[in-house]
Image (cartoon, rainbow, N blue to C red; front, side, top):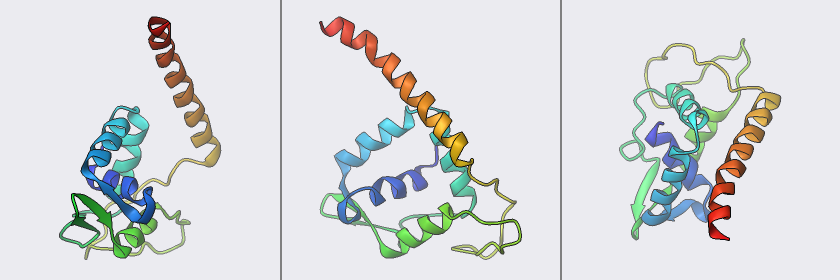
Length: 134
């Protein structure tokens, strides 16, 4: 799992892009244990911006016991997630040299199938806990 990309994805999901450290840690733990899909996705996204450093690049600011994503951070995340066609040029976001070609994100049908499988695994994991709670 790529820590830098995960932090950006977590922060962008919060109102005004700000989360306190406890929330960040909790969300990070959830994503880290959610399965290999998340780790693979963050690695693919991170490969689009080699040398990513969310703090020194000004993508995230530390404030009031938490972190806030900046406007620049949102723009970089959007460019990392943007689908590109084969003939579209790859934009350089933060680096001077382009890295190796990065595979595109899975098609929506494939993502939906994986999402359903993850939900099913979560349901199955909750069943033993519910049985012990009764």
